Image (cartoon, rainbow, N blue to C red; front, side, top):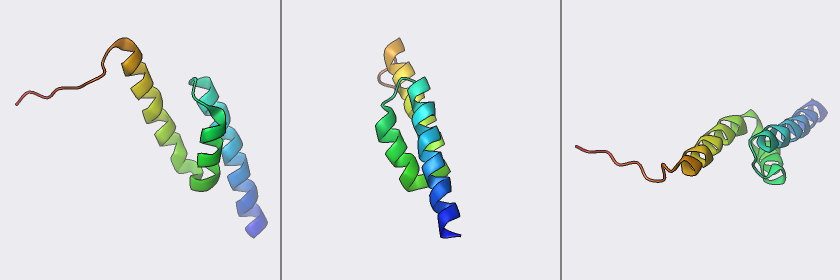
Length: 66
């Protein structure tokens, strides 16, 4: 059972690196995050990708007017 969990985390780390590489992020950092957190890292990769996209388009700060 422990070997299954370890293999699952290693595979998840590899897939996290591949997905991060597609978005132009550093793969090694996200592979380590995938090893430690499991599948929860995919939502964080998506948020980081959106942040970089907004930054490249010029939306650095978001202001909310009340």
